[in-house]
Length: 191
Picture 1 (cartoon, rainbow, N blue to C red):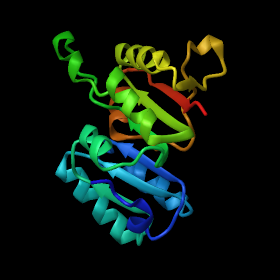
Picture 2 (cartoon, rainbow, N blue to C red):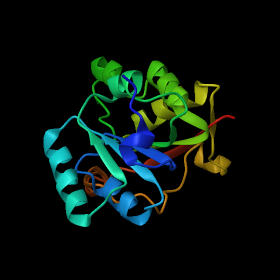
Picture 3 (tube, rainbow, N blue to C red):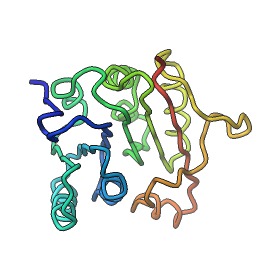
């Protein structure tokens, strides 16, 4: 059953989806800073969902909706093609062990689903503090002809500088403490 996002938000506006928002700090900050946009968060961990819902209620936000469900199913069943202007996937579980790499979210089939839900010209924003996963993200999304890498600096090997709009997440702070680098990627769905 596809969600009618215009009815859900009571308006037609640019829409961003954040998958795996953790405790929601980034999503909350974006929704506060951009009342002209609508934001949807998908997270499976109830504690993070509750944290974000409480903070959004306290802030009086009307441009934020939350779904506590598996992101793959949300894309398959609930979001219409071309219904999103942006998808954010920040610090997804890297599934470090090789035998678990099949569990990583950024896989070819999932990237194809993302492209179908993004409107032409829509953005896919990714970040990770795990270099092997960053390389896989770059390879998998870069191999999908529906996406164009927006990295301009060839010396950055396809990665972007940390965007100012992205809140410093708990996972990013942890990665910094552990001495990890952070890799940001930005792709546009071709028109």
